[in-house]
Length: 159
Image (tube, rainbow, N blue to C red; front, side, top):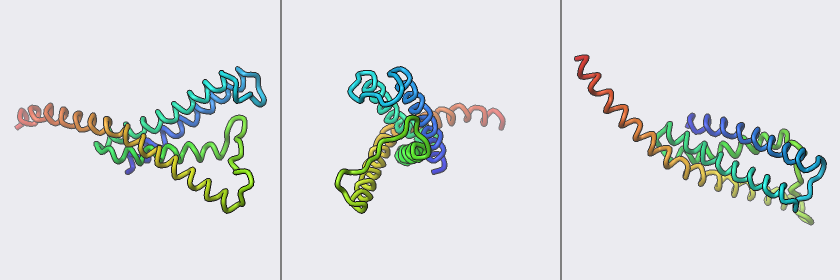
């Protein structure tokens, strides 16, 4: 569990920093202020950011799975990555953030919509983290077997 938290936090902070740099590049390259969301450069950089975030969920899952040799910890690492990334975005985001308020919805409805959104993102992060944790766990088990076979002759030579 500690491994999942460690890798989730490390990758969450890293993807936050990378996404903020991409946002800054987007603003500088496309002329500061509000950028037209239909501009091809803004779309390309937005897609790049989204792909990197999905890759971050997978990477945190891979490293947690490799360390623990269990793919399930990859799912936890993916969720931790999302939580850290989301929390850091709430603290500060280059260029501000657009409001997520649903037009015409009451406060209670907006809260429910926000909770459902977070749950869906957590499920996606868990799934992608688990998918990254599977090859990581396999690699961790293979590495442990390889180390065990190389240690046996050394132990026998000492006795």
